[in-house]
Length: 384
Image (cartoon, rainbow, N blue to C red):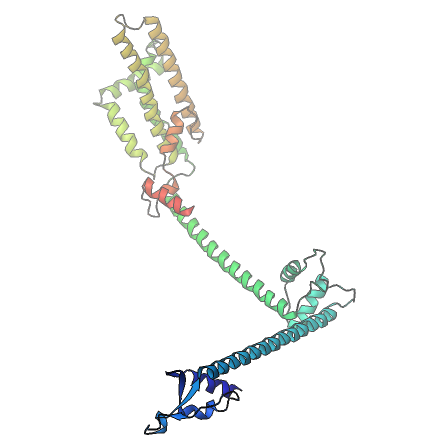
């Protein structure tokens, strides 16, 4: 049959139109005449020089009949092939079902009609000839125990091959998870090393006793500029404390541009991240305390320009005393906190702003150089 289909298809592909008939080369004559429905009318073009040029004429009706027959034959063969495939699939399914039932009976040691966790583990170890970890068997049990009763019934039990395949999948997942955990641990270790390196560059550690004492010195700056507001309170010239303050104030005022020089010096020193954070913080806070003293003086000057008689003496004295007492309280709190090793970051408004200006580890690269803010934000966006 296969030979006939091959020759018939080959013959049909070489049909030529000649008036109202199809002409077929004589070289495939033997193939055409084997078809039971074909009747050749005769030979035309007898003056051809060889067999290669002699043609047999076949009518359109005969050719159509041949093609229809072949189509029916192909359909029949296709139907037979589908039937055979379905039969093979059914046989295979039955074999798998039988093998699964035999395995179930073998695993069900106590013959209670279900496979417990222990029976599943023991049965798989015997079949696979290897010891299995309980957590892997537990994973298998959880996946196939659709009823959730802690055991496998016959309708939940699968073939040994499926168990083996799923076990291999579990092992692959565990290896992948272990590899990922190893990579993550390496990343975290590198991050820890980098953080330690940055911490060594950025002195944010606990202050030493020397650091505690040095951190109080910057508050002399706002105190000197604030003595003007204490002129009504510091009238006892015989008091040693007042005398010491007067001496320091005289030296401070004799330095040209003392206030400007102090601000520049504190800004430069506070930018040195090798200096302990407490000292750097207090230098910045002292600057902003001094700037805060400028506000009441500015208000008083504006008031004097608007009101010809100026600010009444009583109001001036009370205002100056209030400002000086507030300044002394702020400086006292900051000095005591610093001597105790605590950052004096509770001054309303000022401390919060100073904290925002203090450099942190994430602002530095591994060499200790500052990372521009736009680059830090770009990196944070990438991490998200």
